[in-house]
Image 1 (cartoon, protein in one colour):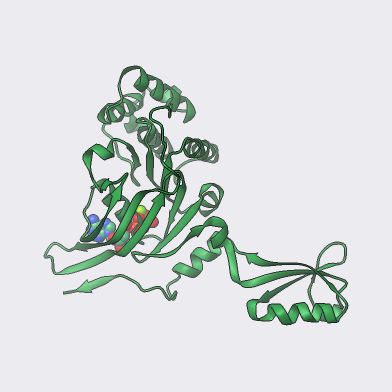
Image 2 (cartoon, rainbow, N blue to C red):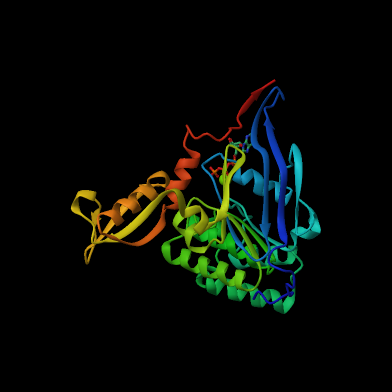
Length: 319
Ligand SMILES: Nc1ncnc2c1ncn2[C@@H]1O[C@H](COP(=O)(O)OP(=O)(O)OP(=O)(O)O)[C@@H](O)[C@H]1O
Ligand SMILES: [Mg+2]
């Protein structure tokens, strides 16, 4: 599996480009509308695993649906593998997993076959991909069972298999592991890392921030239809506001947090950094290190997307 086609392009060429995208959903009378995306722009580079984060209702699924042509932008646009969003031929080179998987009443293996054929995979390659995927996702035993009797997690696995069966260059996955048990999550993580190692690109939305931290190269956070933060995971986790100073031989009066072997830890703001170091030196202490304090992705997410955050919000527009 994943052997078709060679990807010669450099890592930095964009395979997904959202360009100033806005989407307004209108009510039945077309009088009131809701702006789900508001001038949303983002580029996803070839070969990266990109985590698309945002609170419920932020616009993630809407953006993903626009890429596949399942819904249309009200203004702006974008490209996928160099072609306009929704281009039918390009879709064959994509693996797409919808947020709410719903399938025809078929046996699991037949469904995966159906999606493979739909995307132009045939014969030996198709048989071999299906076999590999059923095995990798622990679906072998249930491959001949109709999906109508499947649990939510089993359905999500079938969804992942159908997204991978055409050996896609670009995977667009809307919350791919939300229903999976821990062992299946590890399996999917390995599949995505393997895809990346083969030069493929993964664009996934998720609320599972610990998983995002583990596998994503870059992360984008969307809030009320706008991109509010973009960066590598380590860039985003570095707090510019707080620094950690480790020192030794300092006076108790400086009131740091004692660690092992006489080392004391101070957490200070950017403004306090210089005076704190000077206070340590003048008390005869030795500064061992000064590093920006790490915060969790969850802390960053909450600070950017809380109700009183300062990002401009889209929302209901009355006409
Ligand atoms: N077909 C629709 N008609 C009207 N409004 C819609 C439609 N689809 C989505 N919306 C609205 O657009 C906004 C964005 O929804 P979207 O599904 O894109 O959010 P999301 O970021 O995927 O959220 P979640 O994390 O819950 O999946 C929400 O306010 C939602 O109610
Ligand atoms: Mg969604």
